[in-house]
Image (cartoon, rainbow, N blue to C red):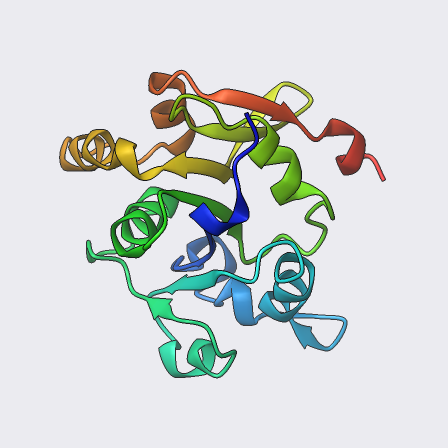
Length: 178
């Protein structure tokens, strides 16, 4: 089964606290004199123009890019799963595909490759050299209740949650080696 783009919203996850970067907002950090989110937008928009941004600070700056910006429904910087939960809750589509704001080398066929593997409402997650890359995922809205329960249990590990969902893996190892 190949999923139609009409039923997919892309969320750029920019809601992090930047704790490993002394509080720097990764999406707004510069790469080649340009905010990283601009590089990601330039690569993702042609793949799926149905975009939203998940951010928890600098909302006014992110809004200037012209896409809806959603803050996490859960406060406290709970990680990428909280951003995914928010996107799934807000999306008008049945599926949400995510990409982190600090992924300037996202594959040019990322979305198409992920959509090819969508089946039976099972989450799809990118992997590189056998390791899940959970911030690169395609998740059906039908998993919203399971995700809410996981978050309510205090769990935050995105990779662990996707494993509990028996996700389908899509290998991007070849792209990562370029």
